[in-house]
Image 1 (tube, rainbow, N blue to C red):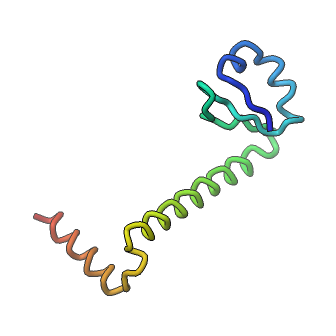
Image 2 (cartoon, one colour):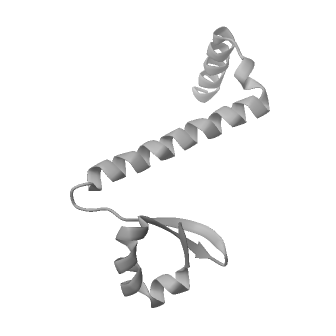
Length: 95
């Protein structure tokens, strides 16, 4: 996997566009930190690539929520406790 700085992206864009189909993905960095992924796509795989990207983000969000739940101890709540919590929050909102 190739890493490029934002400066490289600006200054060498023609070269990058030529290399991208072979590299498939490139990581864009700013001040040495990754900030974006540049991925090769085509007209024929645009929708599938976008769907896969969105699905990956959704999975990442679920995993993050699960970790947060374990950290807070809420992963051990029963269904009845969850319902009671929801009811209490809804009751506060209607006031």
